[in-house]
Image 1 (cartoon, rainbow, N blue to C red):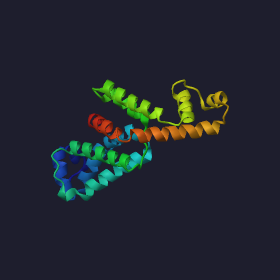
Image 2 (spheres, rainbow, N blue to C red; image 1 turned 180 degrees about the vertical axis):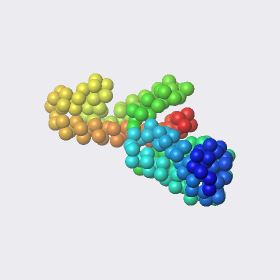
Image 3 (cartoon, rainbow, N blue to C red; image 1 turned 30 degrees about the vertical axis):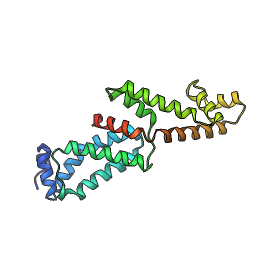
Length: 195
């Protein structure tokens, strides 16, 4: 074992070699160097501290568990792909809910084809809004397109605020489900640019 300061100066390839030989200090340096980047990628999608901490924890536990069999040429690339895969697994397993506004913001910010992606997402959203039950669609449209509050919608439609809230929950759940098949493709493209 070497002093911590010396480890921090070593290139990733050397740290990986030490990690394969069960060097805990090398693992700690790798963790300290990359965990915040990995966390940021996950947080940009989920906006959920607990989910993101779980993803990072699982990733690094797995890295330690597989340390002796690792065949990594680029540690940064490996972690980039590993977090992308974990995010996609969380989405598919429905362990976490995506922050749709974060997806839209990231799509615009990072994608070179952002106009195409935005237009595709908008078309899918419109199609799914059209499939909502009439009352649900009306409430969703008043909220998202006319920017009315739940109370204003309730007054306009002569229904309770609780009914408005319930209908919005149904609409958002339906829209998330409608985007489930499309989002992993968008997220995969974004993740490759975020790291």
